[in-house]
Image (cartoon, rainbow, N blue to C red):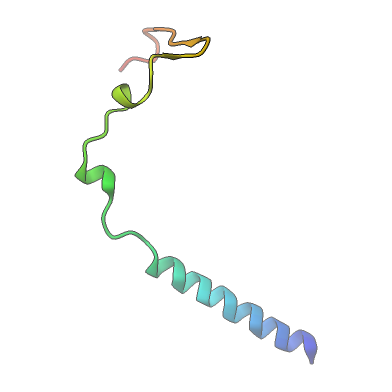
Amino acid sequence: MFSNKMSLIIAALMIAASIGAVVAKPAKKVADEVPVSLEKMVPKSFGDWREFPTAICRW
């Protein structure tokens, strides 16, 4: 009897979590509203690290 009740509780929690995920899903995306430039956001160097320019990764 205990395992049957526990199964129902777990099932109810899983259903509640799935409903919560649908409700909490963002309706609008910030990246669509504000143009984002990773070239400006990521520094070319910091500490001992430096960007290594290569033509392989350029599109």
